[in-house]
Amino acid sequence: MTKTAPVCVFDSGMGGLTVTHAIKRLMPNEPIVYFGDTAHLPYGDKSKETLVRYCLEIVDEFLSRGAKAIVVACNSATSNAWDEIVERVGDKAMVFNVIDPVVNKVAYELHSKIGLIATQATVNSRFYNKKLRKLNKHIKLSSLATPLLVPIIEEGLAKSDICKITLEHYLRHKNLQGIDALILGCTHYPIIYDSINNFYNGKVKIIDSPTIVAHDILYQLKKNNLYNDTGEITEDLFFVSDYTKHFESMAKKFFGRKIQLKQLSLS
Ligand code: DGL
Image (cartoon, rainbow, N blue to C red; front, side, top):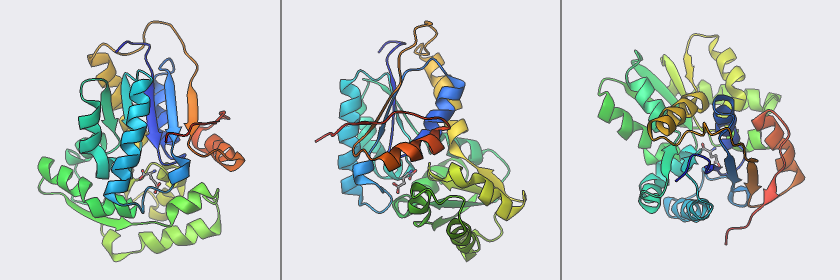
C-alpha cells in the first residue's frame, strides 16, 4: 500500500457519490476510483447471498487496481456483506463502511429515541440495532424500510410532489413518532436532506453519513501513514457496470459537478 494508491468507493448506483463528494471536499488529493453497480441497482431488495456475491466481485476488482482503501458507500451492502468483505480484503487494504462511524457518533450523543430510514435489505439485517446495542444499551432505535425513495431519487424526482408525498407518508409512520434524531441509512438520502429537515422543521436532528464517514477516513489514513500528502495528483475514475446517459446526468446531481462515467463489466 502506498500513499498515492487509490481510495476505491462503491455503491449500487449513484448514491455513493454523496460519500465520494464528501471525501474529495476533505481530501482533494486522494485519487478516487468509483464503481456504481448500476446493472444490479437497486441493492435494497436483494438477498444477502446475492449482495455478498456482487460485493466480493467489486472488492476483487478494487484489489487488482491496488486500492489502499475500499469504502463500502452503501448501507445495504455493508449490512449484508460486511464480514465477507473484511475477510476478502484481509490486510491488503484498509476497509471502511458508512455505518460504523455513524453508530459510533450517535451512541455517545444524547438521543433517547432514534429513528432509522433505510432500504429493506438494511432494515431486515438489523445491523444498526446490533452495532448500537453494543455501544449504548439505553438508546431505542426504531427502523422503517422506505423502499420507494431510491427509485424516486434515481429517477431524478427528488424535488417532485411524488417525492414529497412519499416522504410524508413514511415520516408519519408510527415507527418514527417521538424520535429526537433520524439516521439517513442510505447513501441516496442526502439528496433529500432538505425535504426531510423541512418536514421536521428543525425539531429532529438529521444524521447524515457522508461528512462523518469522510472525517473517519481522513483520520484513519493519517494514522496509518497513507494520507496522500505527496503533492502527486492522479485523475479520478468513475465506472458503472451499465452505462446510460441518464446515469451520467444523475451523477452530476449526486457529485455536484459533471463527471465522465465509463462502462466496466465485472463478470
Ligand atoms: N445507496 C444504497 C444504500 O445505502 C443502496 C440503495 C439501493 O440500491 O437500494 O443502501
